[in-house]
Image 1 (cartoon, rainbow, N blue to C red):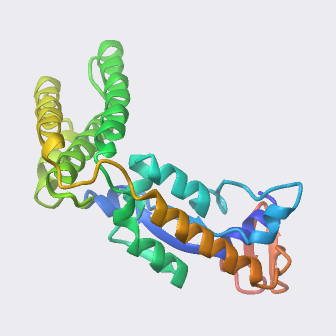
Image 2 (cartoon, helix red, strand yellow; image 1 turned 30 degrees about the horizontal axis):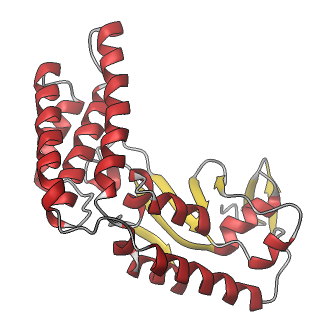
Length: 255
């Protein structure tokens, strides 16, 4: 990764959180820590021929980050992986701009989530079915996470709130991960959850679509404020060096 890209994540992240099993309440001793972040590229960078990146993977694969505008675009389309980031119970860093975005997270939610969550779930289920045909069993961890997503979708449509911690569903879901539940039973649970979401959708307290106007107003104000700030060089700080694409603090060994 170019040092300028590392500097975008280091100096301009407005929000970062832990996702995956740790955020879902499904972590075990061998669970990884998956981090996601949102950075705000300084507005003057968009006035150059080479635009800032829409997303970055790093530093060193430790965190996947979206530029704020790209994040908002995906969230307005009800992308499940993006929407859930704003509802993580494990927030590691947030600025004033990040807090304003969190306060707007309900503006992204709408009944359109039913469609996008269902399409995503269908794609994941086809992969599981292909595994069953090829190997006699699915990847049980992926089956567990698909069930979790279907639960979140159903409950979102029923309540209007997106909750990603599985709560009381933890042990039944972990039993699926361990392969203790038969594939036909897992299929039956998936079918039941999908049917319950379908039933809840027409009566959901969610609006028909997201509040694009509120989100666009937030993005406009944020860009305008950034345009008025002095632009600092996007290079490693004097007390940092770049080694194999990782920013390290000189003399301390810290990342």
